[in-house]
Length: 108
Image (cartoon, rainbow, N blue to C red; front, side):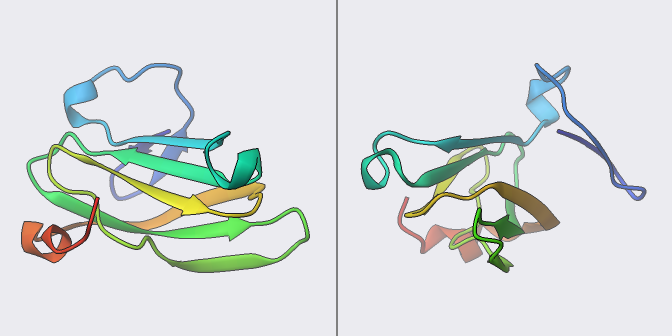
């Protein structure tokens, strides 16, 4: 996805034009999460500041959940969020830069 500031236009892209300034998100049903039943969201942050965001998840049952990821994504690092059940869709919202200290206490 590519987000344009202020107007927040998003667009799916196969490859980042500018990887040095592109937050990369990978969402997959992973064989190593709950026996292939669970989901994993991996966020990779190329920026010099940590980022935090909320996730809206939609399950096949119709149930939805909304809230912040467990930990922010450190500067020049990555973080994973796992769900032990299938998630049909994950929507990212309220992406913001935060202090490095606010995510330093979280375990990877």
